[in-house]
Length: 347
Ligand code: GAL
Image (cartoon, rainbow, N blue to C red; front, side, top):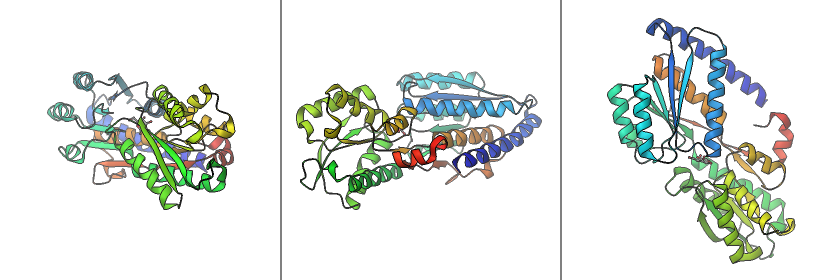
């Protein structure tokens, strides 16, 4: 089923691209489309997998063998907005016809918008969502991402279902699940929303919960391991559930349990979000009770379709844009149960 959907999407992508490329060839003579891609940090696991998926789609499009190749210029801002602003300036001067930006500081896109507007180069922001007012400030700005509320809701419901099926999660038997939250970057839309919504969903599902602590670990596995080691020091076996804003931090919590040699039956239930390669592996080998799939393939495809449409001016009306600006891909639940059912076809 999933595999079919993927082929349908690829076929749709290829068809769409053929139309764009022939239109582009007619319009611009050379037909060349150069796409600039700027990421906030290439060592971020999810963002790097999203970039890989994007490059694979570009390769697929080029393999169709038309005379209008798509090329990609990539930059890593290494967490500096000043560096990213300079990179965007370079991409514009290198003749990129469209730029995809994964902002370092999602509250500070003003320089990028100003430069792009001056050069009349469209910008697709992705994954790190700028505020609506900034996105609306020019008609050639777009956003591709997902709905953070949905990811938190699915995480909370998945954890609740697990707790109902595994009453032993409440190890001290007090009828209340003591939990901790590992949060992504302060101020990131996904961190803020996921932390709140997953807890709300647990409560809605009728689980009695008690928060022990929440700690910021910036999406990072090593930082999460440190935070979790500190929490193990403080609460011992008292932590029964770990809600992590992403898979890397969930795995960092599992690493802390390993390093403290906590026996299997005394470990907390740990759940992540993203469904990265290591995250899915964590679900398969039982380190995580589940994750929430952040559809990087869908987001990459939407970015490429939008980039080609924005660059050529053709096909914009075929895209599922909300308010003419946003494309958001849905999340889905991943547990050991549906990973094994889907087998090779799992995302
Ligand atoms: C989130 C993702 C995190 C991290 C972050 C970077 O959507 O879940 O793992 O990649 O984006 O902005």
